[in-house]
Image 1 (cartoon, one colour):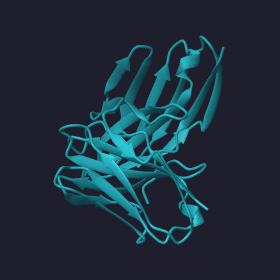
Image 2 (tube, helix red, strand yellow):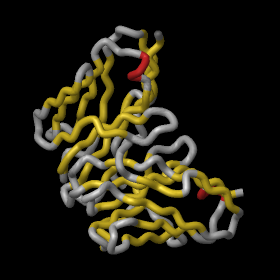
Image 3 (cartoon, helix red, strand yellow):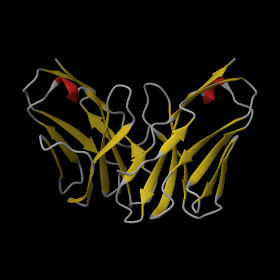
Image 4 (cartoon, one colour):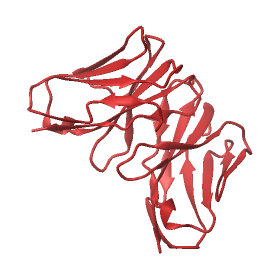
Length: 112
Length: 112
């Protein structure tokens, strides 16, 4: 158990809908990272937050947004969902930029 | 686009064999390199954090070396066991320290 929690574990929704994925980092970790893993692809970095502020942005679509709250949990919002958004979404946390990242169990999103 | 390449893409070895695989990354703007182990249906788990040229790290039968001047890291597994079967990911962290660039991984299968 990495100490990072993600909810829900599975999500099934329809095209055009909007969903919110939630991540609680390890106790004391200020950084939260979001990744997408699509079928047959590696981990794609989406976005990083540090202590409530956006720190780095990767290949995140404009339809996706994220935020980190004062209690350090983070939410990833995915809107106008398309079939291609079906993927495993991981959240990871660490205490600093170069520290080991601790990954949550992931949320599997299926868009029908 | 920053390329982090891992080779081979997949590997099948017999139990007891030793094996190694490569992570190649840009030799400029290096900050750190991480190795992760990712078992099917689980989340990635950190193995090593490497920051200095010439670093060698060891954890049980698994070890890693780092050459930042030429932009590669090797991961070695001595006397492979079936429980070593997993995908091994490397992640390159650029000098700003804010973004992790993951390779697509080497999938290792150890045959009993």
